[in-house]
Structure formats: C-alpha cells, structure tokens
Length: 264
Image (cartoon, rainbow, N blue to C red):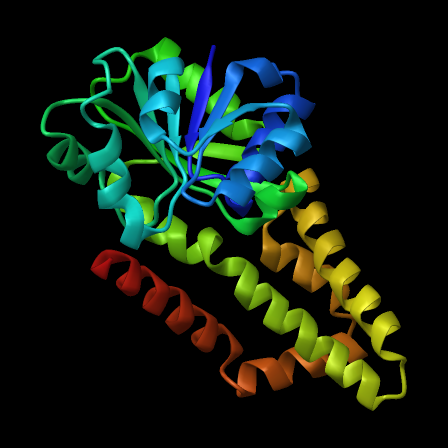
C-alpha cells in the first residue's frame, strides 16, 4: 500500500508519524507534496519519505491519497491533481466541511472517496476520527483506509449526515477541553497552587476521567455519582456548575460548531 499526502502540515505530519510508528506503511512507500518547499524538505528529513512540490507526482505514485489542506485551499488542490487521478485510487479527505459529493463535483466524475474528521490529538496518537466512505469504496479499501486513520488514534464509521456532529463533538472539542483545563488551573492558582503544578493536576484529572469512562464503559452519570459523596466537596461544585448553566452552555457551543461546519 502506497500513501500520498497533498499538504504536509501538522495533521499530515501526525498521520505520517503514526503510519511509520505502527509499521502500517514503510517510509519509502509514503509520498507527499506541499506548496511550501521548507515544509516538504522538513518532512523528508524527519520521516525519510518521498516529497515534492508537485501534487501530480504524489498522486501518480500513490494508491491512497490523503487531502490534508485547509478548506479554503481544497478546490485548488483538487484542480492540480484531478487530471492525474486514476479510477482505482482512493481519496482520503480530512478537509472540514467538504462532502463526498463535493469531491466528485470538483473531480468531475465518480471517484472512490473516504471523508474523515480527526482532531488535533492526532499529534500525540490519540485522535478520535469519524469516517464516511462513498458507495464506490470497497470493503477492502475501507479496511485499508481505516488502517491509515487508526495509526494515529481511534476511528469510527458514521453516516455522512452525522459528520457535522463529529466536527462539533470531537474535531473542535480540544478547544473546549483546553478552556476547561485552563479555568480549573486558574482556580487552583487562586487557591495558592503554582501555575505549572495547577496545569498538571487539571490536565491529568481530565485525562484520567476520560480514560476511566472509556476503559470501564460506565455511563458518565454513574461515574459522576461515584465522586459525589453526601454533603461533600464535589456535590457542592456540581451544584454551582448546574446553577451557572454549565451543561446548557456546552450543548449550545457544540450546536454552534455543528452549524458552522454546515456552512463551510
């Protein structure tokens, strides 16, 4: 399996690193191109992959082609490769807001395509990625695409109409979580804890809580109740969060992100 990357920014770098580390693909079977010569050179030196500034060269060499550019550059990226695409090649898109139909419209014909929405946790191999194939992708090709995507975290196949929800609840979510960590750390600093130690405690509390839920499979409400002792500190904090509209604010934020995703 040979994999090509159109765009070699941070997300592409995370994916390439995951592929190599997991032994899913050899460095010599990975190709990449970027309009920024320095970034292409950096990835070649960092991972030992084949790089170029010509997108067509990347497409000609690969079986699976990852489109890893920002949404505003996606149409131009497709324009530079569509004449080089073969019907048997599979597009893997991590471009936010661009549907499977949009890619076929831009290419000008039916093309095998897998739409994905990862998050920045890919940079540490802990992404959660929503995956939607179009009807032209075979089971074997989807399995190979999932191998690529799972090299930097977890992945789950979803129907395309849920992709805006995926963007809102996981793609954008690191920003919400970082704000929560920062707020908890600020409160700890106010109580006298040194700043770096406050970040360490707050971040590890979030990490440990998420891991506990994933590992046990327990409902988050059950886990919350386990922490809330009668007349204790936690239930007092939960009461303040409820009075401040914590749940409602989170729901509104996720819905706003989903709406913006639909507009892209």
